[in-house]
Length: 355
Image 1: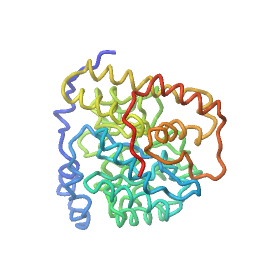
Image 2: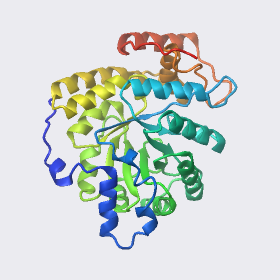
Image 3: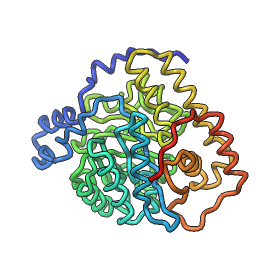
């Protein structure tokens, strides 16, 4: 596929920074409470990071006893910074957020903020309902997060009007700008009309879209949200370059944990006007992404996570491959499959020295 560098929506929509776009909407809407205008996070210079954005959905390292492994998490941040990453999504689905209690969630957010004081920190705040998500957003703000990220509710299915009301209640009360997170595994999708409605809210600033590898909604959503400050972040590794070609604002990727340099390279090549180099980087990402098509990987979420935690452990970034669930083990054959796959598709990186 040939990717074109020009897109008329880029000029019409404008490349403004997140605070500039937010403030433009705030000034145009006299009904917006003044507290949002003077929010610490909305005026933080960290949010002026220019796009396209490379945001890594962090794995959460654990000790063998099931506690958040803060030293390993600090090494992970250093590893990502060395690969050109300065935007992080903590307590995400890749970070096992549904399995974290409040103490573990805050431990992750606080550790990432301390390790990356100048980085942009997105924090998952999803809970068992809107009140829980609001409490999580307030706690995340106290822990140093810049943006709160919320999914549709776990387990229960909503209609789209209910989803708008759910998201609006959180955005109204959140002390942080809010990003919404669409994922196919959730009972209720964020449909394009719903995203368009929510994009008019002055405190809803972005969408992470994990809609599967066969349906990139970027152009459709940007068309539906034209004239709003909503930023579109692709959640599927295979669709990063097609999203940039559709004028998307960047990506939030799990495999950035193990190959940050590849994702940085595709964004940098596209930004530099080198679509051929960007396409070559995307082909390497596609090959790495194909591990998710292996039937063994689809046995459980823990099997999925091992495709990232095992290479990180072998590079010396994290101390163990332990997850939030107790007693999880893997067959030697499965571990060998990951090792063989990564030997073929993951470019070698320098080892990280363990303290």
